[in-house]
Image 1 (cartoon, rainbow, N blue to C red):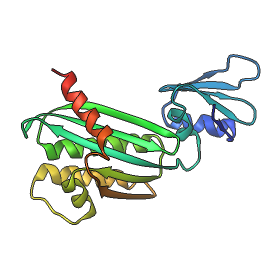
Image 2: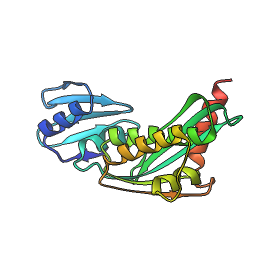
Image 3: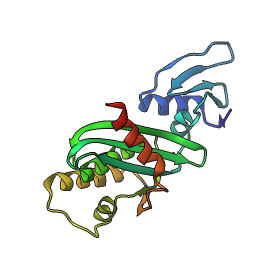
Length: 198
């Protein structure tokens, strides 16, 4: 059970700002409780104890500065354009912070790749992370975000602008192309989302 040394009122404010509901404690010793995802935070006079299957669902929101994480993203399109899905995972030194896979409708593979990245960036922002090491197997997305490649496709231009706007929320970020085998969790999540829709 992680313990976060933070003033309970500061912690309450951070959680409220993140949209987490706070309720009264269960005993005289508990100042308040909050649930988010698979974690429960219990506030005492001088500390917050986090319990549950996924403590990072709350610890990242409670800690000052949010910390650093690796972001993996992948998009899939069957038909290009065709049925598409996004997969992403955020991993910190404490383990998997969050992950997701979702159907996107009919898109090209490049559009799906960008959508996966956008979903991962929004999740990282919502968890209060401030440093990201972004990894994906789409050379196009990586090189466009680095400014090495341009595009004439208006939809991809718009997605690149949105990604750059989201990246402004972070103190530091970098993005690198990685082989598919290193990006396997995001790839699996995207393909599972496509398979589940059948």
